[in-house]
Amino acid sequence: MKKRFNIAIQMDPLEKINPNEDSTFVIAKEAQDRGYKIFHYLPKDISLKNNKITAKGSYFKIVNSSKKFFKHGKTQSVNLNNFHCVLIRQDPPFNMEYITATYFLEMLNKKVIVINNPSEIRNNPEKLSMFKFKNIIPQTLISENIKEIENFIKKYQYTILKPIYGNGGEGIEKVKRGSLKNKKIINKMIKKYKGAIIAQKFIKEIDKGDRRIILIDGDYVGSVARIPKKGSIKANFHAGGSAQKTRLVFKDSKICKILKPYLKKKGLFFTGIDVIGNYLTEINVTSPTGMQEINRLNSVKLEKIFWDKLEKKINK
Image (cartoon, rainbow, N blue to C red):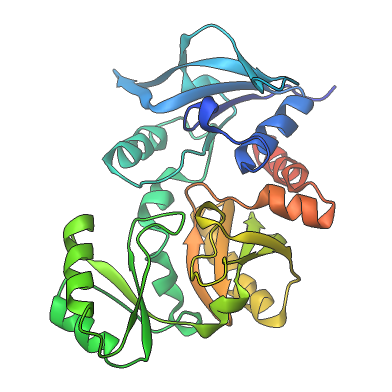
Protein backbone atom coordinates (compact mmCIF):
# COMPACT_ATOMS: atom_id res chain seq x y z
CA MET A 1 0.00 0.00 0.00
CA LYS A 2 1.33 3.41 -0.99
CA LYS A 3 2.24 5.71 1.90
CA ARG A 4 -0.02 8.75 2.37
CA PHE A 5 2.28 11.70 2.84
CA ASN A 6 1.49 14.83 4.82
CA ILE A 7 2.62 17.87 2.79
CA ALA A 8 2.70 21.55 3.79
CA ILE A 9 2.95 24.34 1.23
CA GLN A 10 4.14 27.79 2.29
CA MET A 11 2.86 30.17 -0.35
CA ASP A 12 0.75 33.18 -1.26
CA PRO A 13 -3.05 33.13 -0.85
CA LEU A 14 -4.64 30.38 -2.96
CA GLU A 15 -7.02 33.01 -4.36
CA LYS A 16 -4.07 34.58 -6.21
CA ILE A 17 -3.08 31.37 -8.00
CA ASN A 18 -3.78 31.03 -11.71
CA PRO A 19 -4.68 27.34 -12.17
CA ASN A 20 -3.81 27.53 -15.88
CA GLU A 21 -0.30 28.91 -15.39
CA ASP A 22 1.02 28.36 -11.89
CA SER A 23 3.50 25.52 -11.32
CA THR A 24 2.34 25.14 -7.71
CA PHE A 25 -1.17 24.26 -8.92
CA VAL A 26 -0.04 21.21 -10.91
CA ILE A 27 2.38 20.17 -8.13
CA ALA A 28 -0.47 20.30 -5.59
CA LYS A 29 -2.91 18.56 -7.98
CA GLU A 30 -0.48 15.69 -8.55
CA ALA A 31 0.06 15.40 -4.78
CA GLN A 32 -3.69 15.18 -4.28
CA ASP A 33 -4.01 12.57 -7.05
CA ARG A 34 -1.44 10.46 -5.18
CA GLY A 35 -3.54 10.62 -2.02
CA TYR A 36 -1.39 13.09 -0.09
CA LYS A 37 -2.87 15.48 2.46
CA ILE A 38 -2.00 19.10 1.59
CA PHE A 39 -1.82 21.91 4.15
CA HIS A 40 -1.54 25.55 3.08
CA TYR A 41 -0.26 28.47 5.13
CA LEU A 42 0.97 32.00 4.46
CA PRO A 43 4.58 33.04 5.28
CA LYS A 44 3.28 35.48 7.92
CA ASP A 45 1.53 32.61 9.73
CA ILE A 46 4.61 30.55 10.61
CA SER A 47 5.70 30.91 14.26
CA LEU A 48 8.45 29.79 16.63
CA LYS A 49 7.13 28.84 20.08
CA ASN A 50 9.57 27.37 22.61
CA ASN A 51 11.60 25.61 19.90
CA LYS A 52 8.41 24.36 18.19
CA ILE A 53 7.74 25.53 14.63
CA THR A 54 4.02 25.97 14.05
CA ALA A 55 1.94 27.27 11.16
CA LYS A 56 -1.64 28.49 11.10
CA GLY A 57 -3.55 27.56 7.97
CA SER A 58 -5.79 24.83 6.59
CA TYR A 59 -5.82 21.62 4.63
CA PHE A 60 -7.33 22.08 1.19
CA LYS A 61 -8.52 20.11 -1.82
CA ILE A 62 -8.52 21.03 -5.49
CA VAL A 63 -12.02 20.83 -6.95
CA ASN A 64 -13.52 21.10 -10.42
CA SER A 65 -15.33 24.41 -10.36
CA SER A 66 -15.44 27.40 -12.68
CA LYS A 67 -15.77 29.74 -9.69
CA LYS A 68 -13.17 28.38 -7.27
CA PHE A 69 -10.59 25.66 -7.85
CA PHE A 70 -9.96 24.84 -4.19
CA LYS A 71 -11.88 24.06 -1.01
CA HIS A 72 -10.44 24.99 2.38
CA GLY A 73 -10.83 22.91 5.52
CA LYS A 74 -11.04 24.51 8.96
CA THR A 75 -8.29 26.89 10.06
CA GLN A 76 -5.93 25.27 12.55
CA SER A 77 -2.45 25.54 14.01
CA VAL A 78 -0.12 22.63 13.19
CA ASN A 79 3.34 21.49 14.24
CA LEU A 80 5.41 21.43 11.04
CA ASN A 81 7.58 18.66 12.49
CA ASN A 82 4.61 16.36 11.92
CA PHE A 83 4.87 16.74 8.14
CA HIS A 84 6.89 14.66 5.68
CA CYS A 85 7.70 17.64 3.50
CA VAL A 86 7.36 21.43 3.38
CA LEU A 87 7.37 23.18 -0.01
CA ILE A 88 8.45 26.84 -0.10
CA ARG A 89 6.44 28.25 -2.99
CA GLN A 90 5.64 31.89 -2.27
CA ASP A 91 6.69 34.42 -4.89
CA PRO A 92 9.38 37.03 -4.23
CA PRO A 93 10.11 39.75 -3.12
CA PHE A 94 12.89 38.17 -1.14
CA ASN A 95 12.37 40.39 1.91
CA MET A 96 12.83 40.03 5.68
CA GLU A 97 9.53 38.12 6.01
CA TYR A 98 10.85 35.60 3.49
CA ILE A 99 14.24 35.39 5.21
CA THR A 100 12.71 34.96 8.69
CA ALA A 101 10.58 32.06 7.42
CA THR A 102 13.71 30.33 6.08
CA TYR A 103 15.34 30.57 9.54
CA PHE A 104 12.27 28.97 11.14
CA LEU A 105 12.13 26.16 8.56
CA GLU A 106 15.84 25.51 9.04
CA MET A 107 15.07 24.56 12.66
CA LEU A 108 12.74 21.71 11.70
CA ASN A 109 13.63 18.12 12.48
CA LYS A 110 15.97 16.74 9.80
CA LYS A 111 13.43 14.07 8.91
CA VAL A 112 11.19 16.85 7.49
CA ILE A 113 12.31 17.57 3.93
CA VAL A 114 12.11 21.25 3.00
CA ILE A 115 12.11 22.12 -0.70
CA ASN A 116 14.21 24.07 -1.40
CA ASN A 117 16.80 23.93 1.39
CA PRO A 118 15.93 27.12 3.33
CA SER A 119 19.50 28.07 4.23
CA GLU A 120 20.54 27.73 0.59
CA ILE A 121 17.61 29.84 -0.60
CA ARG A 122 19.13 32.59 1.58
CA ASN A 123 22.65 31.89 0.35
CA ASN A 124 21.70 31.87 -3.34
CA PRO A 125 19.91 35.09 -4.31
CA GLU A 126 18.69 34.48 -7.82
CA LYS A 127 20.67 37.18 -9.61
CA LEU A 128 23.79 36.80 -7.45
CA SER A 129 24.39 33.05 -7.27
CA MET A 130 25.27 32.91 -10.97
CA PHE A 131 28.57 34.63 -10.10
CA LYS A 132 29.74 31.26 -8.79
CA PHE A 133 29.86 30.23 -12.47
CA LYS A 134 31.74 33.17 -13.99
CA ASN A 135 32.71 31.38 -17.21
CA ILE A 136 29.11 31.00 -18.39
CA ILE A 137 27.60 34.40 -17.49
CA PRO A 138 27.61 37.72 -19.38
CA GLN A 139 29.78 40.69 -18.38
CA THR A 140 28.07 42.00 -15.23
CA LEU A 141 28.57 44.66 -12.57
CA ILE A 142 26.70 45.01 -9.28
CA SER A 143 27.22 48.33 -7.56
CA GLU A 144 25.62 51.31 -5.86
CA ASN A 145 28.44 53.56 -7.05
CA ILE A 146 27.09 55.74 -9.85
CA LYS A 147 30.53 56.38 -11.41
CA GLU A 148 31.28 52.64 -11.51
CA ILE A 149 27.99 51.98 -13.28
CA GLU A 150 28.54 54.84 -15.75
CA ASN A 151 32.01 53.52 -16.61
CA PHE A 152 30.56 50.03 -17.17
CA ILE A 153 27.89 51.42 -19.52
CA LYS A 154 30.61 53.15 -21.60
CA LYS A 155 32.09 49.74 -22.52
CA TYR A 156 29.10 48.47 -24.50
CA GLN A 157 26.67 49.87 -27.05
CA TYR A 158 23.76 48.76 -24.89
CA THR A 159 23.53 47.76 -21.23
CA ILE A 160 20.72 46.26 -19.17
CA LEU A 161 20.04 47.73 -15.72
CA LYS A 162 17.89 45.78 -13.26
CA PRO A 163 17.23 45.43 -9.52
CA ILE A 164 18.93 42.61 -7.61
CA TYR A 165 15.77 41.36 -5.94
CA GLY A 166 13.15 42.09 -8.59
CA ASN A 167 11.13 39.39 -10.30
CA GLY A 168 8.84 38.95 -13.30
CA GLY A 169 10.79 41.48 -15.39
CA GLU A 170 10.23 44.26 -12.85
CA GLY A 171 12.40 47.38 -13.18
CA ILE A 172 14.46 46.31 -16.21
CA GLU A 173 15.91 49.18 -18.26
CA LYS A 174 17.91 49.13 -21.50
CA VAL A 175 20.35 52.05 -21.77
CA LYS A 176 22.54 53.21 -24.65
CA ARG A 177 26.18 54.25 -24.37
CA GLY A 178 26.49 58.05 -24.34
CA SER A 179 22.82 58.77 -23.58
CA LEU A 180 22.29 61.88 -21.46
CA LYS A 181 19.47 60.06 -19.64
CA ASN A 182 21.70 57.35 -18.16
CA LYS A 183 22.71 59.11 -14.94
CA LYS A 184 19.09 59.99 -14.18
CA ILE A 185 17.99 56.38 -14.75
CA ILE A 186 20.80 55.03 -12.53
CA ASN A 187 19.96 57.49 -9.73
CA LYS A 188 16.27 56.69 -9.90
CA MET A 189 16.86 52.92 -9.71
CA ILE A 190 19.31 53.16 -6.80
CA LYS A 191 16.79 55.27 -4.86
CA LYS A 192 13.83 53.07 -5.73
CA TYR A 193 15.56 49.79 -4.82
CA LYS A 194 17.50 51.29 -1.90
CA GLY A 195 20.96 50.07 -2.84
CA ALA A 196 23.09 48.36 -5.45
CA ILE A 197 21.69 47.50 -8.88
CA ILE A 198 22.82 45.18 -11.67
CA ALA A 199 24.43 46.42 -14.90
CA GLN A 200 24.78 43.71 -17.52
CA LYS A 201 26.03 43.71 -21.10
CA PHE A 202 23.00 43.55 -23.40
CA ILE A 203 22.70 40.16 -25.10
CA LYS A 204 21.22 40.74 -28.56
CA GLU A 205 19.83 37.19 -28.73
CA ILE A 206 17.04 38.31 -26.38
CA ASP A 207 15.13 39.22 -29.56
CA LYS A 208 14.71 35.46 -30.02
CA GLY A 209 13.73 35.09 -26.38
CA ASP A 210 15.34 33.45 -23.38
CA ARG A 211 15.04 29.83 -22.33
CA ARG A 212 13.58 28.80 -18.99
CA ILE A 213 15.08 25.42 -18.11
CA ILE A 214 13.61 23.34 -15.29
CA LEU A 215 15.96 21.19 -13.23
CA ILE A 216 14.68 18.69 -10.67
CA ASP A 217 17.30 17.32 -8.26
CA GLY A 218 19.90 18.73 -10.66
CA ASP A 219 18.55 16.90 -13.71
CA TYR A 220 17.17 18.57 -16.83
CA VAL A 221 13.47 17.74 -17.24
CA GLY A 222 12.23 20.36 -19.69
CA SER A 223 12.55 23.84 -21.14
CA VAL A 224 10.48 26.55 -22.80
CA ALA A 225 11.43 29.56 -24.90
CA ARG A 226 9.98 32.83 -23.59
CA ILE A 227 9.53 35.31 -26.43
CA PRO A 228 9.22 39.03 -25.61
CA LYS A 229 6.49 41.14 -27.15
CA LYS A 230 7.55 43.12 -30.21
CA GLY A 231 9.67 46.06 -29.12
CA SER A 232 10.17 44.71 -25.60
CA ILE A 233 13.25 43.21 -23.95
CA LYS A 234 11.23 41.44 -21.24
CA ALA A 235 10.66 37.76 -21.96
CA ASN A 236 9.10 36.88 -18.57
CA PHE A 237 5.57 35.51 -18.76
CA HIS A 238 4.48 38.05 -16.12
CA ALA A 239 5.75 40.81 -18.42
CA GLY A 240 3.80 39.58 -21.45
CA GLY A 241 6.29 37.09 -22.90
CA SER A 242 4.83 34.18 -24.86
CA ALA A 243 5.74 30.49 -24.63
CA GLN A 244 7.31 28.66 -27.55
CA LYS A 245 8.55 25.11 -27.84
CA THR A 246 12.31 24.68 -27.68
CA ARG A 247 14.86 21.91 -27.35
CA LEU A 248 17.95 21.33 -25.23
CA VAL A 249 20.79 22.78 -27.32
CA PHE A 250 24.41 21.84 -26.70
CA LYS A 251 25.25 25.01 -24.73
CA ASP A 252 22.20 24.52 -22.48
CA SER A 253 23.24 20.93 -21.85
CA LYS A 254 26.73 22.08 -20.90
CA ILE A 255 25.34 24.70 -18.48
CA CYS A 256 23.07 22.10 -16.84
CA LYS A 257 26.02 19.73 -16.43
CA ILE A 258 28.10 22.47 -14.75
CA LEU A 259 25.28 23.38 -12.34
CA LYS A 260 24.15 19.87 -11.35
CA PRO A 261 26.79 19.02 -8.68
CA TYR A 262 26.32 22.40 -7.02
CA LEU A 263 22.51 22.23 -6.96
CA LYS A 264 22.51 18.68 -5.53
CA LYS A 265 25.12 19.53 -2.89
CA LYS A 266 23.13 22.57 -1.72
CA GLY A 267 19.76 20.83 -1.62
CA LEU A 268 18.30 23.04 -4.36
CA PHE A 269 15.90 20.36 -5.57
CA PHE A 270 13.60 22.45 -7.78
CA THR A 271 15.23 25.21 -9.82
CA GLY A 272 14.55 27.18 -12.96
CA ILE A 273 17.52 28.61 -14.80
CA ASP A 274 17.35 31.32 -17.46
CA VAL A 275 19.62 31.30 -20.50
CA ILE A 276 19.95 33.98 -23.19
CA GLY A 277 22.07 33.03 -26.20
CA ASN A 278 25.00 31.16 -24.65
CA TYR A 279 24.81 32.81 -21.24
CA LEU A 280 23.33 31.86 -17.89
CA THR A 281 21.50 34.94 -16.56
CA GLU A 282 19.62 33.67 -13.49
CA ILE A 283 19.23 30.69 -11.15
CA ASN A 284 15.70 30.72 -9.71
CA VAL A 285 15.50 28.91 -6.37
CA THR A 286 12.56 30.58 -4.60
CA SER A 287 9.49 29.78 -6.70
CA PRO A 288 10.40 28.61 -10.22
CA THR A 289 7.68 28.75 -12.87
CA GLY A 290 7.30 27.33 -16.37
CA MET A 291 6.02 23.82 -15.64
CA GLN A 292 2.59 24.25 -17.20
CA GLU A 293 3.94 25.87 -20.37
CA ILE A 294 6.44 23.02 -20.82
CA ASN A 295 3.71 20.45 -20.14
CA ARG A 296 1.37 21.89 -22.79
CA LEU A 297 4.02 22.31 -25.48
CA ASN A 298 5.52 18.85 -25.03
CA SER A 299 2.56 16.74 -23.81
CA VAL A 300 4.40 15.86 -20.58
CA LYS A 301 3.69 16.12 -16.85
CA LEU A 302 6.74 17.46 -15.05
CA GLU A 303 4.87 17.34 -11.74
CA LYS A 304 5.00 13.53 -11.95
CA ILE A 305 8.79 13.65 -12.23
CA PHE A 306 8.84 16.13 -9.33
CA TRP A 307 6.97 13.78 -6.98
CA ASP A 308 8.65 10.59 -8.22
CA LYS A 309 12.03 12.06 -7.29
CA LEU A 310 10.81 13.65 -4.05
CA GLU A 311 9.10 10.45 -2.87
CA LYS A 312 12.47 8.69 -3.02
CA LYS A 313 13.95 11.32 -0.71
CA ILE A 314 11.02 11.12 1.72
CA ASN A 315 11.20 7.30 1.80
CA LYS A 316 14.94 7.18 2.56
